[in-house]
Image (cartoon, rainbow, N blue to C red; front, side, top):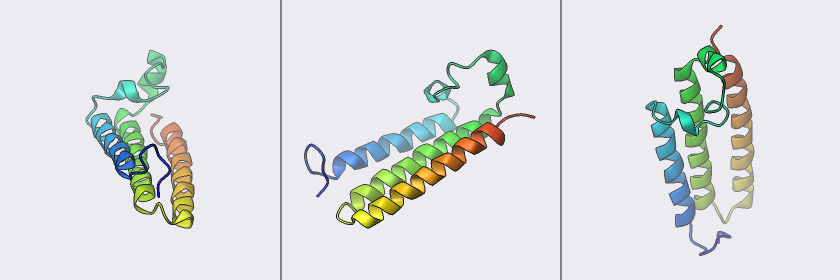
Length: 107
């Protein structure tokens, strides 16, 4: 079973739902203050960013996190699947961070 306080997968599903909602808030343009680094950036740095692309990438990270957490809740009894999901998520986050710093920057 899942090693949480209650032993229930519903805690993880709640976390996944929160990630989905936060991603939706960011895509709609209402959650720029949630993006670490961007909310404290200088006005010159903010002017260099393509906000739509940045929001899409950050929201996709949150949605992929929701898939990971939901997958871990679903496949809790299969450690190999959990390890593969975690590795895939880490690779995705690295790629998304590179894209935020290249593709989402205005040239």
